[in-house]
Image: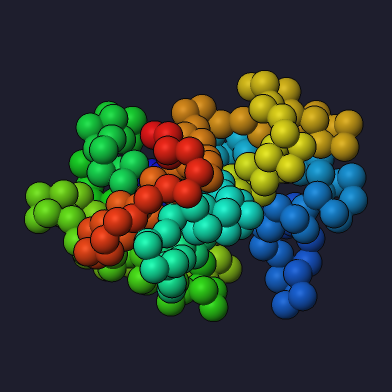
Length: 243
C-alpha cells in the first residue's frame, strides 16, 4: 500500500531493476518471484534489490493466506436442519480473501491513514486473471454493501491491470512470493535474515500485516453470511468458532 505520489516515484525505479529479472515466455523481463528463485544464483542474488526498493518507497505491506482444506472443512461444519448449505461463490478463496481484507481496512482506517500519510480512498488493483469474476463478486458483497461513510473510504470501482504495465503488481508478487515461501516452510523470518536455499536474502518488510484465515475464522464468517441471508438454525457441527 502506498499513496499515488509514492507509486509514481516507485514505478520508474522498479523498471530500472527489471534487467535483473529473467526473460519470460514473452521474451520480456518482468519480476515474478517464482521465476527469480528458479533462474540461477544471479537471479537469487538480485532479489534483495527489489526488496530494498519496496522498503524505500512503500510504507505498508499486507498479505493474507488461507488453505482450501480449511475452507472445505469449514463448509461441512456449517449446516441447517435440512442438510449442508450450497455456498456457491461465497466460500471461494477470492471471496473470503477480499472480504476479510476489506473488513481489515474498514476497521483500521485511522492506522492506515497515519502510516500512509494520506486519507485518499483506497483503490484495489488486481492482476487481470481469469478469476476476476470471483473478485468482482467479492467486491460487490463487501465494499458495495458498506454504509455510505465507510464506502467513501474505498475507490469508486475495482480495478484490474496488466502486471507488465502496472509495475506495482510485480511488487505485490514479491510480497506474495515471500509469504508463500515462509508458510510452506512454517517459519517466521527474522528482520534482515531470511535464508533461501542457504542464501541470505532480505525479505521481511516493516510494517507488514500478515492475516491468516483459520478454519474457525472461516466457519464464523460462513455462519454470519448464512444468518444475514435468512438461513434458519445455522449451527457449527464441531466446536464453536473462535474469533
